[in-house]
Length: 278
Length: 205
Ligand code: FES
Ligand SMILES: [Fe+2]
Image (cartoon, rainbow over the protein chains, first blue to last red):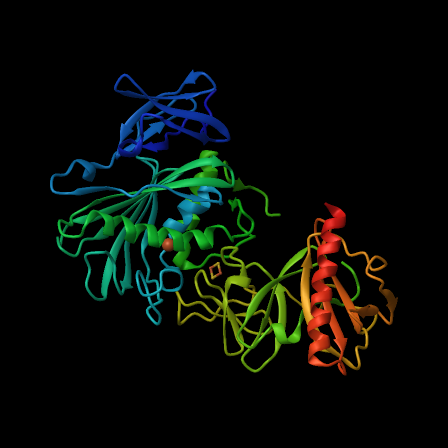
């Protein structure tokens, strides 16, 4: 029987940081071991070997039977981009809350003050949201927001355009206008590893056009942002993401979040979710 | 829900423009004081996306949520959504508000209509609040109930102890002391509170 939760791909390690000792971790509440085996990486759980692959700097594993290939990020293979392994941030929250926070721009002025947003530039204009049936993904496009310092490479405030894409329940990909390369999009992803329903490890990863900023600064910039998000994510009640309307009140700025919740519910993806309003 | 006033803080420990988390009958609340000095005790959960309001910030007479900056008037009604500056927030966006009052230098909260006023604490001044990772045993501390508080002496100073129960057999003690005591005696009484805490926690260990 297929289980929409077990049949997904999840990040379990960063290839560049997997040492000879391997990595003992958890996935969906079960112990998982990631290890080198004669030049290859294997992922096992309770003696069983899991389907795995290396892509976008990470090791991906599927606890069940994969129903589709790992989502594609064509930009990852585009020449001229720097691929940035940011590393992991552990967050005591539902993996779904972590993704939803990543899809949200209205919090920038309050949580990432003077970096990704600043009062009085708080307005979120209309944007487009769709569940793209043909690819079974959630997309938000034409998102615009004023930012004091949109990226490490940005000097001064600009209005940034974004697109958000959710290709898998615990993955979000953000495309944002790229100050040094008009016409191209910087790619920033959030790969979430669900350890338990209320505990996750988030692995940000980037594919940028930025030849100048030192790698440590790029990593540090993203880590600063994610630590700010963590202070929110660990303090939302209930801890699990409510999929049924009623408990939390969205507005027009939350259309991406509303579509994400609806899509999760429709796909039966309930790990880290709360179904009936408590 | 218990129909009486629970002590949650000493008034002087909640300055204007400050918000703090408190627990009453197991309910998590955000307790805050406006610029003009008014206090309020609300459910500690923003109706938008569930963020704890005790992490928020006070501006003037309103409390704002730290996540998306929605701000709420004293009535609990949402009055501003920064993502939509021109939108009049619907009536339905409202934080549950609880009864809160100040008396005798103490802040009190009640989840249900209280049957009586908080105890009279005339002649006493606030000393300190202390959290016990243990139940409070007034007899072991030599204190006896009188007029709604536990009374007796600590380090020779007359005190009144108010108990705020917390889940898991923990509690906060709000201690007031004789207003006529010398500053040095109050320092001793404050140490006495610390001793009381240590003894309670050791008795449990
Ligand atoms: S969660 Fe409070 S304003 Fe969004
Ligand atoms: Fe954020």
